[in-house]
Structure formats: structure tokens, C-alpha cells
Length: 368
Image 1 (cartoon, rainbow, N blue to C red):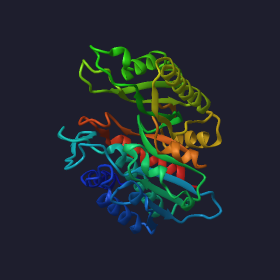
Image 2 (image 1 turned 180 degrees about the vertical axis):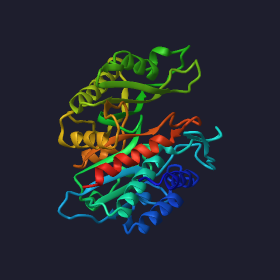
Image 3 (image 1 turned 45 degrees about the vertical axis):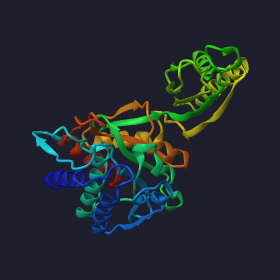
Image 4 (image 1 turned 30 degrees about the vertical axis):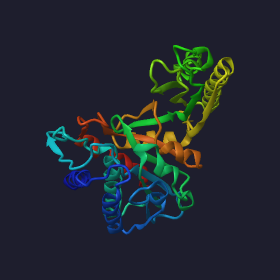
């Protein structure tokens, strides 16, 4: 029933259109045109203006049976670098590149499969709910598109995001929230050889604070890391400033708050001990979420997998996605695997089977 040749050609066309983060305009216009051909009501928001991008998030509304609950289908339009001049190559069942660029299956595979599933429903006069297809910008640089979505435009209270590795049938039922630590430890400069006692070493403060932090794997749901410590002083100068960047993640939002509070307490204690200060903050990036395996929507997705001839696999993620922001804004969103492999590298690839199977799954979710 799936037009395999059209599915593959759509994907190949999409990945050849450059759309690195904040430069998604050409690709967004192509996707908008394809959905208009399906009779969708198409519009953009002003998220691009807010974050300095070339275009906003794309909303494509396909009217359906109004007695049914509307459903959200989503994926992101941007790619990581190097994502310009992509030349896809088909080798048997695998689509990849020549190795000089990423492929862009993250996340153009998701967009392709959503489009093809809706085409299939339209061509076969399949009854379906109203479908709100939302395609975001700037996901790869901090979920900025979904953070600035106009959620008032979205009426659906449940939906799927196609943005996970793993074969079609993989269901991400939990993912962590994140807080970021940014700031500077501030001490006092002095000559390190002549009068070191007159100085306060910012490096010493930072070292004491970090050495007292619980870091890396905290528990099965929680992690924390200091990724950057930056100072540039001569060895004969007591360093007065040190920049630090860090993060904490947890699938349990209470644990996330506790870990963030702990890291800040270590900083405060170190500053007090050595007489320095800290100028910075712990900022909320996004909240975590988790669904029970018996959740009504999870069960619906599992049943759709079975109907599509797939084996459902529940999994947890160690990273965030647009789902996190959608959940935080009241949408029961679930991230699904769509076959992308070795993403964010020039070895990225996807199988044709996964494109077909993901399309089958989306079709099963929308048909009624």
C-alpha cells in the first residue's frame, strides 16, 4: 500500500536541501508546499525572529473527523553540522552519504514518514482525526524552536514526535529534564611569588566546590557533569576569575531540583571558605517526563506497532527532545524511534525498511 518509490524520493529530496540550525528557510518552504498539496492549512510563527533564525516553526493542519480527538505529529527541520551539500547514496537497504557530511535522517526521516502516512490516508479515503503536523526549528541547538512554539495554535492534547534512534517500534516512555550551571568564581588577584597571601585563588575556590559535588552517575535517573573550567592567568598571578559550565539531568523533576540545589550549595560553601564570590546561575532548560507502560496513550501506540507488524519496545532516553517542552506545555507527547543511526556523525545512515515501517506505524496511529 505504501508507495515505496515516492517515500524514498521524498526523503532523498529533503536531505539534499540544506537546513542547518537557524538556516531552515528553504527546507521549511518545501515542506510547507508539500503539505499544501495535501490540502493542509499552513502557517509559520515568529520563533525565528525571537531566536535569530531564518524562519519560524511550521504548522500544518489537516482537517479530519471532528468527532475524534485531534492528534499531533511532529519532527524538527534543522540538522547539525556539517549539513550542507548532502549527497545521499543508496547501497542496498541503506541510505548514507559519501562521508563528508551528515545524512540528515535526524530528523528528515520523521518528516518524510509523517507526510507519506498522511498521503496514504488521503489516497485511500481513510477516516482520520484532525492532524496537526508541527515542524520545529533549532531543535539541535537547545530545543529552541519548541521552546518558542505558539502552543495556542495547537489544539491536540496528545501526539508523537519522530526523533529517536532505534528501529521503528521503539517508544521512549521517559526522558530527563535538564538544568545548566553557568557562571564565574571570583577571587582576588595578587603576585603569586611576592604576596600570594594577599590574593584569593578563584581556581582554588572552583576546585574545592567541584571536588565536593556529586557528579556523573548519581542514580539510575540522574546525572551531573562539569564540562568546562576556564581560566587564563600567568603562573605568577593568583587567578581572580574562573568560568565554569555544567549541567544536571534527571527523569525525576524532584531529583533534578535536589541535584541542582546541591551543586549550588557546594559553590556557596566554597566561596564562604575562601572568601570569594560566584556570579552565575542555575537555569532551567526543560523538565523531565515519564509514562507508565499502562498509560492509555502508550498502550495505543503499542497496539499501533503490532498492527503495523512491528514489535513495540519501551525505552528510556538520556537526552532531551522537543517532547520535553511539549509535555511541559500540557501535551501528552511521546518520542518514537524511526531508524536513524549514528546521528550527528558523517557515518549517519538509515535503512529503507525503517522508513517504510515508520510510515506504517504513523498510518496505524492516524487511521480510525
